[in-house]
Image 1 (cartoon, rainbow, N blue to C red):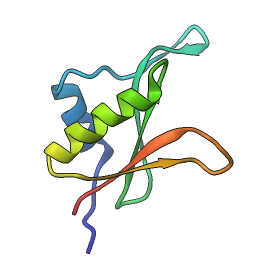
Image 2: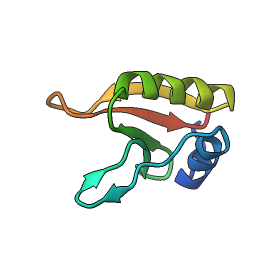
Image 3: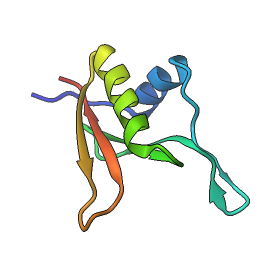
Length: 88
């Protein structure tokens, strides 16, 4: 059974690994990762800026190395790519 996960735990792993959070500055997103809680058992990770696919792959590898279960996904209708992160 899947366990509860918190966005701050996923954020801590990525921040400690040297990745930068994206920031909304002057009407636009600065490059980096963004995390969104999706219920009690899933966190979504996005990348804002160029190199989205490569950045998401780096995040996936880092999170898996830290023991999270990570599945790459794309929002319906050809939307943004994202990672679904859960605890095994």
